[in-house]
Amino acid sequence: MAENRPTPPDVDRVAASRAAVAARRARAAVKSQIAQGKRSALDVLSAATESPDGVEGRLRVTEFLISIPAIGVTKMHRIMGRLEISPSKRLGGLGKHQRDRLRDFLTTRTVARRGDSSAKLVVLAGPTAVGKGTVAAHIRQHHPGVHLSVSATTRAPRPGETAGVSYFFVDDAEFDRMVAAGDLLEWATVHNAHRYGTPRGPVTEALNEGHSVLLEIDIQGARAVRRAMPEARLVFLLPPSWDELVRRLIGRDTEAPAEQARRLETAKLELAAQGEFDYRVVNHDVGEAAREVVDLMNLRTAPLLP
Ligand SMILES: Nc1ncnc2c1ncn2[C@@H]1O[C@H](COP(=O)(O)OP(=O)(O)OP(=O)(O)O)[C@@H](O)[C@H]1O
Ligand SMILES: Nc1nc2c(ncn2[C@@H]2O[C@H](COP(=O)(O)O)[C@@H](O)[C@H]2O)c(=O)[nH]1
Image 1 (tube, rainbow, N blue to C red):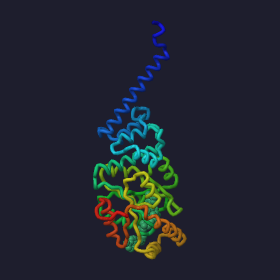
Image 2: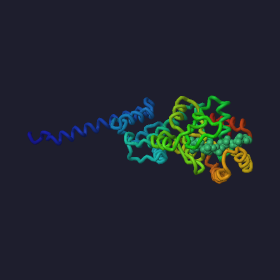
Image 3: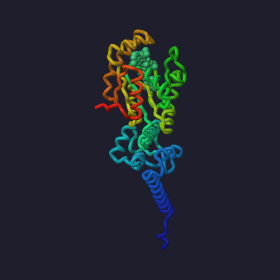
Image 4: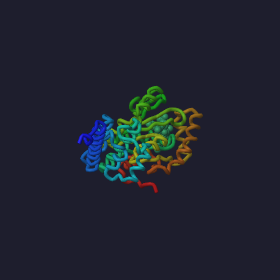
């Protein structure tokens, strides 16, 4: 009889295995809440962030994604690759940038799937001097329903530009801080000169509140948004011709000749990237181009690229 009594190590093992079973059941319950729509994936991610060793924090990212309706194994692997998260990671073990990418992905997916046709993330990009800023300013003035993201930049203000409206003008140290804190949805060094970035918070907040958001950014930024938020619509603004683009750049008279030449070199590469975009809009007339872009925010009239 005495030799059948559990020894202390046996008792520990039994307790550990009971705890493991209970933890597995708790994780299965969370997954089924997500699958049945009783709990949002964003809510589970927030709980995992707050308490990395809690039930949600112990969920593997792979099982978390698969429990989301309409995400199967193939799609899950594609998403993991795009978000650059290794399959062994648990929600609570994600680095800040990985967590930000996952949250951005879930936010745009949620907005897109709730069928709110008025809430779209649209990226307007195109070569230098094509008129992105002019078209964006026209949209700000005539289409108040569109939320225009205000970028941060390390370049100095130009005459007529207003801090907090045209850009948030910051120094290098502040830009470094924003990058390190994960405050930027994307950022890039543009024309080999200054850094520009999209503040993350206002974009996700506006989308969650059901507003359309327009980002007027360069092509590197557009590519980064596509990676972070695949539901975003990418619009490429084209000049009526190369000569007109050159005329606009020189006519704007905001860059010295050397900088103009550098921007035109970049413009050739940027024009070659137009095929990566979902839509193209030719900027013959500012009002018409602005209307086309706004139409695209509701995905109504403009044709999809082949
Ligand atoms: N449809 C248009 N017809 C004629 N001129 C235009 C048109 N759109 C913009 N412009 C002019 O072209 C010049 C460049 O426009 P803008 O500064 O908006 O370009 P951008 O694409 O924002 O440039 P960058 O990327 O270098 O900041 C400006 O002088 C602007 O007034
Ligand atoms: N990647 C990003 N590019 C941005 C952002 N904000 C603006 N831009 C682009 O920078 C160039 C130059 O702008 P300028 O005002 O100095 O002429 C232009 O192509 C903008 O679209 C941003 O947040 N991210």
